[in-house]
Length: 227
Image (cartoon, rainbow, N blue to C red):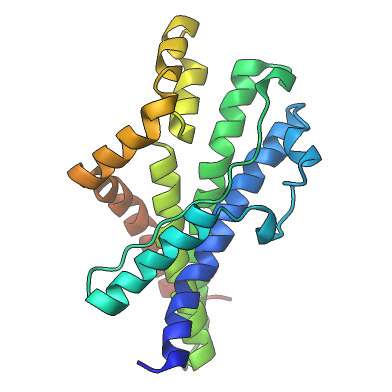
C-alpha cells in the first residue's frame, strides 16, 4: 500500500479519535468549572490544544497499535483510546451530588453530540454532492468514522462501573451508603470493565443500535435533500 494511502487511512481514524477524546475531557472540565471547581482551569486543561490532553498510552500507544494490526495482520479494524483525565475536585461543588452527576454526563453527552453532528454532516454530503471528489470522500469517511468512535466512547464510558463516567453517575444517584460501597470498586474497576468488555462482546452489542440510529439519521437527511 502506498504511503499516501496509509497516511490517509490513519488520519481518517486518528483525527476523529483525537477530537472525540479531547472534547470529552474538556467537557468534564468546563462543566466542573461551571459548578464551582476551578481545578481543571488552574491546571490549564480547559483548552482545545490536544497536547495538553495527550496520554502517552491511551492517546498514542494503544490507538497506534490498534491501527497497525489490521494493516499488518489483516485483523478486523477496531480503534479505541483515551485522553489524560482532567483533574476534578468535588469539594468545590456547590451541590455535590447533582454537580457530580452533571460533570460525569458531560463527557459521554459531548460524544453523543459529536456522533449526531457527524451523522448530519454525512447526510448533508450525500444530499448535496452530485459528484464525489477525493476531498468529499475523505470528509465523508471522517464523518462515518467519527460516528463509530463517538458512539463507542459514549457507550463505553456510560458502563456503570467506577472509574468510568457511568459509575460516577450511578454513585451520584444511589443512596450514600450504597454509593460508598460502589466507590470501593474504583481501584479495580477499569480491570473489571476490560475483562467484561473483552470476554463478553457486550460493548459491541450496546454500541450497534446507537451507531445504527446515527446512520439512519444520516440516511433520512440524505433522502430529504437540502433546500
